[in-house]
Image (tube, rainbow, N blue to C red; front, side, top):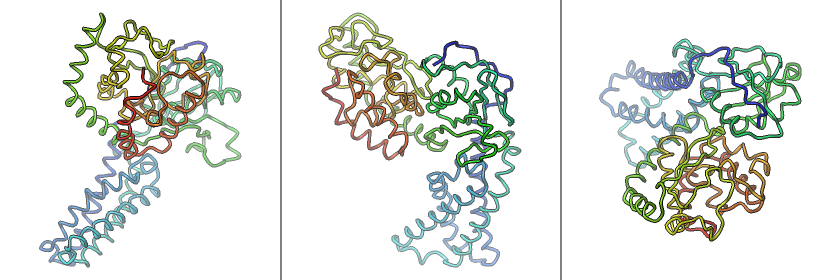
Length: 453
């Protein structure tokens, strides 16, 4: 997408904020735990029989259940770490849901009579009050507590655009963008420069805003375009820095908690699959080696999350490999070996990508990664649909929504690609861990597919 690959020059740099943000989440969790426990302990002041009742057991169960519920309702997400009002509302909602769940569980277990209703009632009231106070006092002081601003903000200055006011962690200059040409190398450089950022603000001439908006949609972070004229209009949907108004044009599909859940899920599934399928993979490796000369694995550069390029692994299924992907595999392709024909039809050639998942460049479920030279109707994918780059806001997957809907194989027509892009963007919009489980379950039906050749 760039006409000249200028080096990105840093004028200011602060330590990456990912560790500071994790510390902030830990502080918020610890504050909630202390507030909840303190709320129930306060009841002991008026009721000395607190310690001999089963109320302490209720309190001990309450804390871990609250943390799970609070995480699921985003009580520790970015907005909660910035805005005390939002943080308090979410913590109170999580606490109310948790108390309701425990009361219902106690009712069905017929153990309600074992708990003091007065103590639970007063303890819960104190817990609500103290969590609100704790979050109100804690959140504005998080930067001082964790040792710095937990949110990194990058400024990209395109050409001689004026530099907006604001406290930026890093300023990148010397970046030239061309709206007519999509260059994966420049997207990769942009992704590397923004890898540790939470937000990026672009200062550019008005005629280049559309190009930057398109480039930022797949960057997996909140992307904003500096628009000084919005200082007067102040519409909804601008960035949080009123001194330097910017239009929010992109935001990553998953917050930090969701990314942690998805990553742990990937590690668990990939690790288990590698152990169980080790004999199968060893047998395939021996077959590939004996069937034709060449390496067992085929490596190819693919486009991954935030438009960063990575090396994807597959079992070699051809006599010669097309590393750029210019030529799609056709039915009865003379390059495919006997072994390759079987493992491609059964999707067994994809198994080495489990190592990509463990390494963090791929996920179990996500948009499938494509080679740089992939084409539809003799056009590069990004020439067919300018939404193509948006699908890279999440890690690519071994399987995905497009695959279970039957959109796989060669892209002979432009609609073949558009259908996949539609499904990928739908997946990013409506992600849940339960949908990932459903997609994995439904993938079994399409492992053997008529378009897999």
